[in-house]
Length: 194
Image (cartoon, rainbow, N blue to C red; front, top):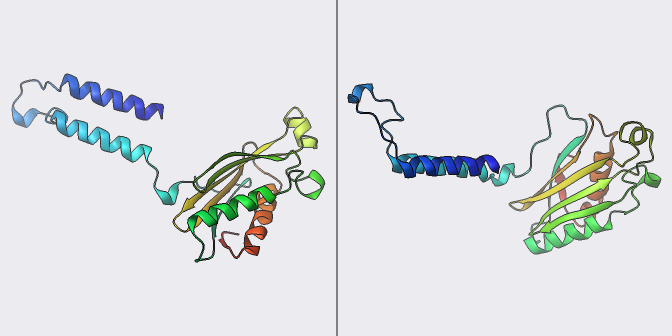
């Protein structure tokens, strides 16, 4: 966002102070020198909008190529479900995830927190117990944190579950999404990228 603000400020200053082109023959002028203030301002704002407004299809970042600690899925509620009902069902499913985690705490044993819940968009943090070998050896005994982001995309919802650290998650993101997906299937939802 700082880059967008800086670009906007620079464009505004440049256009308000004006481009004063040196007096040269028309053939020797560069494209920048021949740009009017109005055109420069319009181009600057168009660039700012293109940078700062994500398209709905790309609202969630793709997982890095070859990633072993990031998964992305798309889930669609039954066609008769309203957007509000779909968000409500999704909220119920997310709250049904066991706070003590799965597999006796081996998966998400440190619980989870819903960070954001707005208009069908959700952001959650899942924590490991912090008791395992890798947490003790490589993370000073602190839990590893994974992020789950869910965004509406038309009539579907895009899910992205990713570890913040490391190259591998030992299947934790997959187990988390499988659990959530099982609850969604019970409600008639269908998934892609499973």
